[in-house]
Amino acid sequence: MKVKLILNNKAKTFDVSPDEYLLDTLRNHHITSVKKGCNQSTCGVCTVLLDGKPILSCSILTVLLSERHITTVEGIQKEVDRISDYFGEEGADQCGFCNSGLALTIYAMKKELKNPTDEEIKKYVVGNLCRCSGYQAQFLAIKKYLEDAL
Image 1 (cartoon, one colour):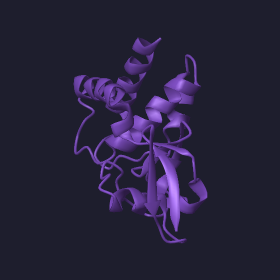
Image 2 (image 1 turned 90 degrees about the vertical axis):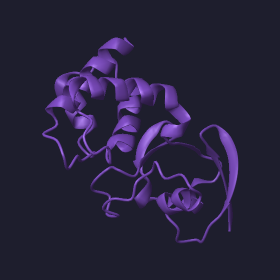
Image 3 (image 1 turned 135 degrees about the vertical axis):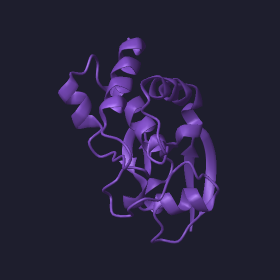
Image 4 (image 1 turned 90 degrees about the horizontal axis):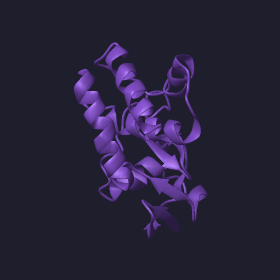
């Protein structure tokens, strides 16, 4: 069946099966910044923005998203580059597998929360797992990014 999505601010029509998840639709169409991790809604590497809010693309059927706005890191590349710079400065960029999902979550948090506390930051990104780090460098990078965004 045909489903029209607004992907990174461009109207796109995809031919999908009724049981196809958004993650698979995106990857089948060469949008590989959206990673396939756990396939069980527990790691966050498949995060995309749905109408500006972070969602796990491995958990939502594409057919339910007709005419909705989907954003991947390609749609906010300038901001992703800024976030990446902060991660590099703090030594938080290790294997990079979690970076795309985390960057989208951080971007959404910046839009949603004004002057978040440390606890609010931690709560907002809790669904984004990193298998390489102890999270402290990432947390410092996130704080600096949010502070500079003010």
